[in-house]
Image (cartoon, rainbow, N blue to C red):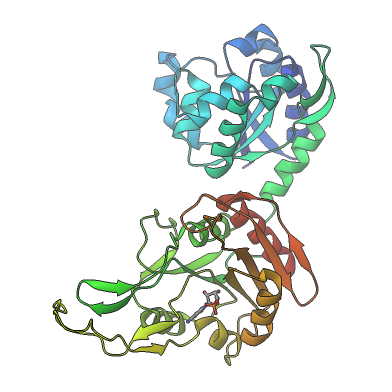
Amino acid sequence: MKKKITIIIGGGIAAYKSLELIRHLQSENFEVIPVLTKSASNFITSLSISAISKNKVYTDLFDLNDESEMGHIQLSRISELIIVAPATANLIAKFANGIADDLATTLILATDKKVLLAPSMNVRMWNHFATKENIKKLKNYGFQFVGPNSGEMACGEFGLGRMAEPLEIKNKVMNTFKISNLSNKKILVTSGATRERIDPVRYISNDSSGLQGTSIANALLRKGAKVTFITGPSNIEKPVGAKIINVETAREMYDAVFKNGPYNIAICAAAVSDWYVENKNSYKIKKKSSNPPQISLRENPDILSELSKSKNRPELVVGFAAETDELIKNAEKKLTKKGCDIIVANKIDKKSTVFGNAENKVSIISNKKTIHWPKISKVEIGNKLSDLIENLTN
Ligand code: C5P
């Protein structure tokens, strides 16, 4: 049976290009299910789309006939991929805000499948802060994008906003379907902060939210990896589909890591406490008028270091370094000392709010080279890092 792709055609001048896109997808042996928005029907007719796609064109959410044949929920799940081309500023705004007031927007809200958007709009609309915010939100939700390109537009202006060419969209689709070499690889992701108890109500910890580790795990899961997610206490929603192991202390994290291995790849994103409280109390320490209690610290085992030097060493080990000074120099030292293959380094200073923030600016350090990424969302860092790992492993 042919794989199905749903194409939502939005109301923009580029709608005519969707006919060519349908042809390209058919030549790759996909069955195309077209959905036409109301405004798109001003640019292109149902008749031409059904003639090309050789399928029924879905147009209205409240078509009772369709609901009895195929409800909108079923329609949102029937395909392997949903393409929105052209994705207008209006559609993008609705998707970003969870609006479901017609068939196209309802399908997007209801779907559990990948969504690929091909934006198309006037350059000022594309550059408007509202559109930028919406795009950022959608990228964080895991939507994929192709284009827009720069060039002359139907409105006579010039700049970014032209819809990607049908062939470019098809190539992106083919990439989406490529089976990743991370598929079925067993990958460890440690995440969040650990806690070291002083007594039953007090502990030593740090500000790590777990967002970065979670984003990495989600990106790897999208590539079909089998993720073991070992996390300290965190309020971030856990990556669905991963094997989740909740721990509190560094020691518990260490035990869980070595009990659940071996792994093909390991990503140690957790901000593990370097020390534990040797003289931990089993009762709440009382405040006395005399001297405050003395806390005696001992070093925790270094999970990253031991994993990198273990007998069953993963093929690729990635560590993180949060540094307040001499970021690159310290991160390079860490790479050698711990014996991992890559260090993802981010600077922590008084102005920086890396922990708990949705964005970060990191450098990727390996023995071969150092790459600096711009400030992007932690979700995008997760995506880029999983692409990088995919390229580095077999
Ligand atoms: O030495 P430092 O804590 O700065 O190193 C950070 C890196 O080492 C992170 O990848 C972290 O997950 C890992 N680490 C570890 N076990 C520890 C301390 C840090 O795996 N006990």
